[in-house]
Length: 193
Image 1 (cartoon, one colour):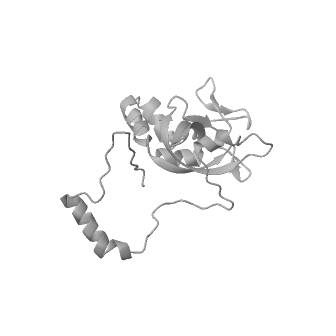
Image 2 (spheres, rainbow, N blue to C red):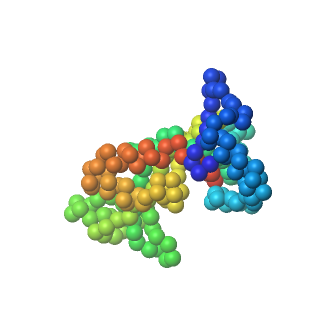
Image 3 (cartoon, rainbow, N blue to C red):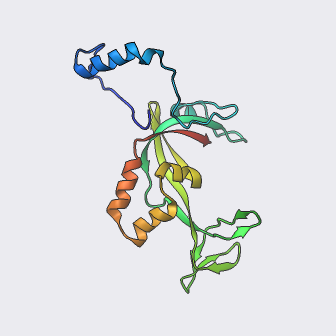
């Protein structure tokens, strides 16, 4: 709940109605207030039409993603690893009609950015997430790729900011701490397989 979870191992001891002050206080609150309180959802889960909840093991077990059409599923999982080497790419900031080009750009000889699609050069480029991560639930582990909006939600920062921390400011410790802070946080993922 809210990025926190409880697990146990074979030697874990579970006590029902333990006799210590915090447990008595919680039980007293529940008996007098909590049991009659209306529950309020504090999650940002968005229910999609035809939402199908699956587990990691069901992705492989049911052969999801192997047909002509992609499978869309919803999965609750935690992030166990983020590939910090290739978390974003530089892209074209120019508009093509009503949307940005977003094609990958390269540095030209005179330190400007060049887009081969638009055939133009510019001083500044944009940065977009292409975040590769391992996610896990209690049934298994799998790799996913989170693009721009999902990457921002997972990381809590723009791709441009993280790129500047890592490469421009060369603050490896701060960058590493940001990556570590995102590990083992739970999310509800909407996956296209």
